[in-house]
Image 1 (cartoon, rainbow, N blue to C red):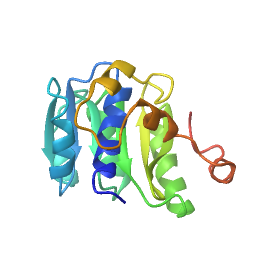
Image 2: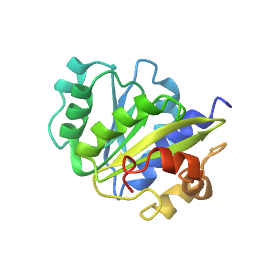
Image 3: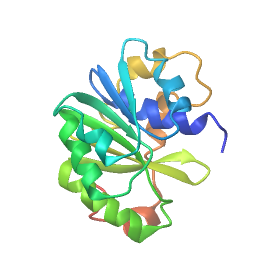
Image 4: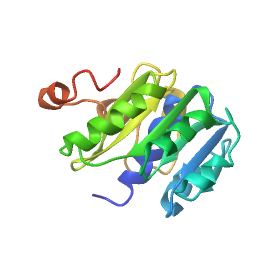
Length: 181
């Protein structure tokens, strides 16, 4: 996969789905590429914490608009992410390939307890992430102005954003009742 596709899609999809993001939390042990993408949203504050349950426990309730998470290791982390997200918050989380059906169903079922919308999206070349949202739908509520006004992007744009959520019927059938859209 091209080096720039992953960070652009992990950052800009949730940020451009959020109505008015002011605070973004990046949960990563190697956040440099994600931070570079966040810097393209100069009006939005962001904070980076390590991929650990202890680090997220210290975050205030309802204080974050978007969480970008590169590591999922237990359901307690997802509960804390839900706690720190505002009522209309978005989560972009990396996950096993959609081919790892049991692992993904487990993750999506947990996310479904906290979020109205839980949808996998393509990162390109068979890689994917999950967008979980408490309020906004990633294709119906995309902020087109924000998505199109970003500069210095190699891959992401509003057309790619929308297309990333298209899934073949075999995926839809496999995840029927698990994906919430």
